[in-house]
Length: 67
Image (cartoon, rainbow, N blue to C red; front, side, top):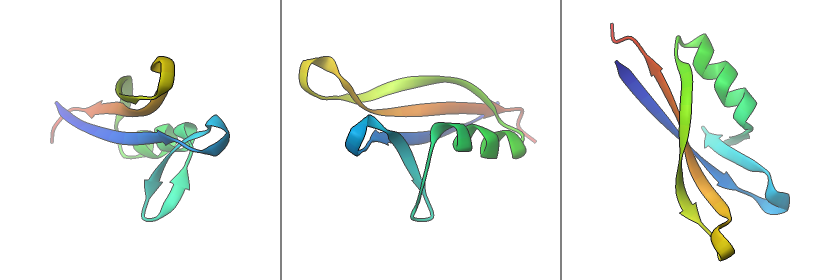
């Protein structure tokens, strides 16, 4: 299996995004883009928390069968 991790950060207003070539993208956009490349979404991992345990960063995990 081949895995890919995309780091999402919490922006102003509580919106999560990741940067791809300097462009901010939403989680659904990431899932659609990765699916187009043959990956499937398998879950996420919390990376960083803020005050009182609020999530500020997480990685989305995608997998596909290695070529």
